[in-house]
Image (cartoon, rainbow over all chains, first blue to last red; front, side, top):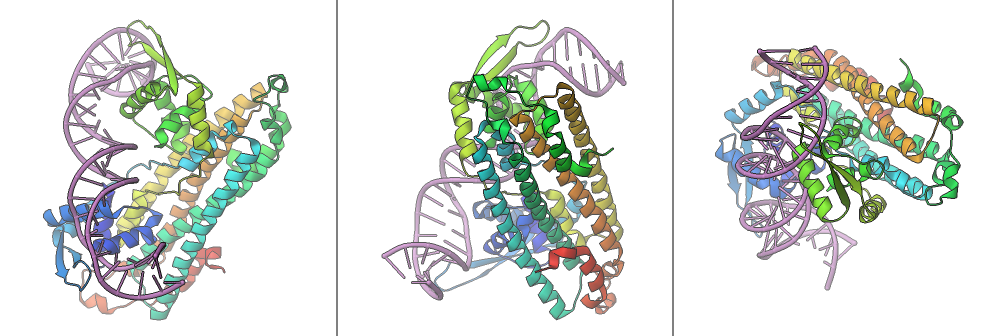
Length: 217
Length: 217
DNA sequence: ACTGCCATGTAAAACGTTACATGATTTT
DNA sequence: AAAATCATGTAACGTTTTACATGGCAGT
């Protein structure tokens, strides 16, 4: 149900085509949402029928005509109602964390490999977001203007950046922890090795370091 | 596509009914996935047809018979293949962040109110996860055993806890920043007030503090 | 020559949510 | 007396993804 409001929110400040919206969902808005063109176009059609948005057509040579959408009064009202409605409880979907959760089924070296590879992916995402931040920062500073809209997108950008920083740090610390207990992966296939039980007390200090303050109170 | 592997991953260590799986998706696994019973039951049916899992029926008095599922060799192989496949790039969906992003359309007091309310929600989630952590910690310590599975679910639990801690801190810092520039919301409706432009240089110090290290390099 | 960008969309398949359907037992 | 827990599922609806379909222009 949120794609609708992602579109209305964006159109509440700028006009855009379906293609423009897609770029925004891949760029800044990717911090909180994403969508395919094949979903955006029908949604724009529905919103126009509901009279939440209106379009004008700009003919182009050699390309399909541009359909430029803008928000209507009814659309602004719909957006406002949604902004005032209580936020949904977050339903997380993170398939990498799911993989990690079951990686005890994988050889030790493979676990380290997967964690390192994912850390790199997240580092790239962080770099991309830092680019967006610096671009915006420079443009705001140059024009020397400040608006509530700029403030709100800045705080969202910070959330995106922090999410990446946190994920990267977690990867680093988790790799360290796993590397500190390779013995846990020695058994499994070998029946005789199963007798070699590892006691929690052996790894407790490493665990305490890893969890840090989170174990308090 | 991941619900399948969420089920296979869980069944790779314990037998379970559909109902048991739902509880796990609402409890520990909620850190990375969630699902409804009406999706879990058909998925279990499909997995049984594919011979990735097998079931036995336990008759009960007054309740429908329990169908207890366990993983097969083929299921284990499927899980392993998935664990070795490259992780999907994360596609975030966070409708609260979407709301925040467009809250420049809302009155100033309403923005503060929404942020405070959401912070409270996240604090409750954190408290729930801390309970799970302590329960597990106590049980592990008592039995004094350590396994790769325990390690991997511990690191995921840490990720879940840190996510909440980060969200709460972000809410707090963002409330502070918004409270430091109420002037940004004064205009909007009033045409005469629009001439009163706010310059970025006026709020730059607050911004620098808010972003901190993230603006470096 | 091939890849990527611009610009529109449709159709089919997969995935996810809400509502419906049943009913005993236990807790508040 | 009402709500929650246990335990299974189906049907309808809504959302998201992948595949199909077109075609010029710019850059490597």
